[in-house]
Image (cartoon, rainbow, N blue to C red):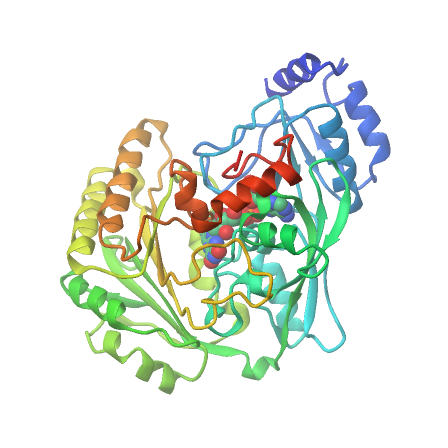
Length: 474
Ligand SMILES: Cc1cc2nc3c(=O)[nH]c(=O)nc-3n(C[C@H](O)[C@H](O)[C@H](O)COP(=O)(O)OP(=O)(O)OC[C@H]3O[C@@H](n4cnc5c(N)ncnc54)[C@H](O)[C@@H]3O)c2cc1C
């Protein structure tokens, strides 16, 4: 059905598409320009992290060679065919308008990763996930500050800012970028650095999806032998009666550069019942880690699974969150403060939703807290459009189920939690990190103080509004 709609849609745009299986004249003429490694799949079947509000394309073009990206975009733009870039397929926002008239440009096979000789820089392509880059860094006796879930593409996260466990030491992902190979909305290739085009660099580092398609990037790396590339981390499980104590301790804890932590409301892996889990992370020894997180450990967890583990396993605790499919309409709130009363309300709402909907028993409220020691200031000199450098914690409500009949209840649940937290967030106005946002927020909540400059630049760099699937600025 999707193929048929794609063909009809393309015909409406004046393109002559005559047969199925992408043997139309447009597809044939495009195919003849592409490498044999790039394929065109005439189906909308597309595996993503969340099926809720997912794009339903008429065709998927899976890129096999980086150079083909520009050719596909030039052809799509000329024919006025809408397109969406997909790297890791994890974006959960409901801002996609791509339907069977459009194409997904799938970057997931572009996975080349190379380090320079002294391991201070790494160049990777758009399909490289956190796991791909971390594994490559490990093999090269290096550390790259990538984000905290293995399945996410490094660039997908980075173009919105990019949060990572080690950002207190290395800065946000955008602070680690050295150069970007970009294809613009017309299909023209350019290499962008903070020096070569400060204005476009600023826009790409925080609102990247609206300003270009990044095919590969060069990023900072730190040489470090495997034996020293370790951290102390692991799950602490608390009885829910300790919730207020845990929240107060997090609120009062200043996260030093080597510290990061998450708190989860999720099913206890041992009992399947709702539980309060805390995941401290310390870039150093167990002894010092325990000292730094003493205020939380002293509350008395029911179980303590912390240990010193190697860099290439830091993300393993989050692998369950990478499971693809199912419906996960998620909501977020950026927090400078954590209020125990608000969090008790959140817990009550969470357990009620959990208890009333057995199919939603993977539902999770995940809050990630970061040191702002390094991120408070941009390091490139030109700045970046990412607006929330001083945020300590990011709460994400993830209702997780399969049946569309639960959608309206799940949306209400997520919105209730967002409003409990917004009132006590400690920010001057509600703020939502673009990569965690739902899509129903006003743009000022997503782009903060960068909004009006971004909107002006959008008119300059993408006047035809072709890059308009991800929190569109115009
Ligand atoms: C399990 C999980 C864990 C997460 N953990 C973190 C985390 O630790 N830190 C963090 O910062 N975020 C995290 N996120 C959020 C993540 O950053 C966003 O979902 C991000 O958009 C995912 O990028 P992707 O390429 O994997 O997904 P996609 O759906 O492929 O990309 C999302 C959007 O980004 C744009 N895009 C992707 N690649 C490119 C490109 N090469 N050029 C231009 N535009 C592009 C497209 O508009 C696309 O629609 C997590 C998400 C999930 C589901």
